[in-house]
Every structure is written in structure tokens, then in C-alpha cells.
Image (cartoon, rainbow, N blue to C red; front, side):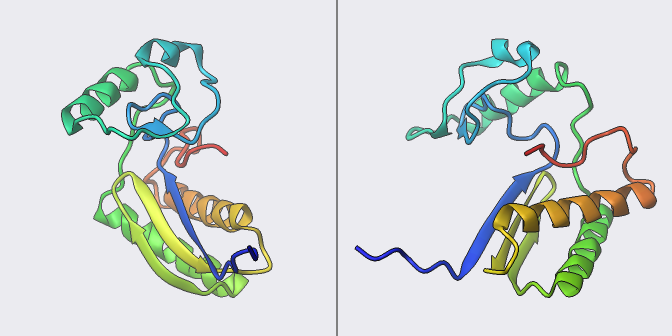
Amino acid sequence: MAQPIVIAHHLIWTAYGWWLPNDPRGSGSTAIRSDVLTNLGDLHFGRKQVQPSGRDVREFYREAASLLKHPLLTFDSSQQQIIATAFARVIERERYTCWACAIMPDHVHIVIRKHKHQAEDIAENLMQVSRAYLIETGFRESTHPTWIAG
């Protein structure tokens, strides 16, 4: 069978602390790097076939919030607009073609046409510039992570 042709990347990433390695829904992580999080539950690579209730997920993050190095933060509409502006600048500067973007309170979805940059580099460009904009506008401290690492 021929290799599928990739025409776009659907990039998804979360704000700091919002999709932990041992999230009850499963995750893309292969390790739990913080010992304080191991008591929250076992690691499950990939999405679980049977998804937990919303109540269970909320309880997991209530417990996790007290264990994280930094507070969980969400993006309000003002911060979402700043992120959108940052994304627009990166998209224009790098000449990306963006077909869709949703900036949610705790994560981002963006569909970007295949480009000379790898998908990971595109996401990193968007994360770095949007984080810098949030810091410049006073919505984030420079010592607080904005996005997931890696």
C-alpha cells in the first residue's frame, strides 16, 4: 500500500498542567516525570477505549492542582485574543497556511498546511510567540509555564 500523502497537520496542545501523563482518559506520554504525580493514577499510553466520567476527570485535576509546581491557569477571552494575534503574526511571518484554529480555555487545535517546517517546529513557533505575548501583556509571569513541555 502506498504511503498516505500528508497535506496538513492537526496540531493540539494544552496549557500547562491540563493533560497530565496519568490523565484518566489516557495520554500520549510514555513516562511520569514527576514523582509527586504518580499517586494520582497509572500511566496509560493512548486514549482509553472506555472514557471516564467528566466528574472523575474534574476530581483528578482538583487533586493534581495541589501537586503541580505552578497553578493551573486557563485563558479567558482577552487572553485568547492575544494568543490569536500571536498566532496570526507567526503564520504571516513563516508563511504558513492555517485552515482552522480553535483557542479553548485550556488547549489549542490548529490545522496547518504541510510546510517546510516539521509539525513540531510549527507548534513550537506558535507556543513561543504566544507565550511571549502573554508575558508582555501581563497575563503570565515569566516564571510560569504557559504550554505543555515537549
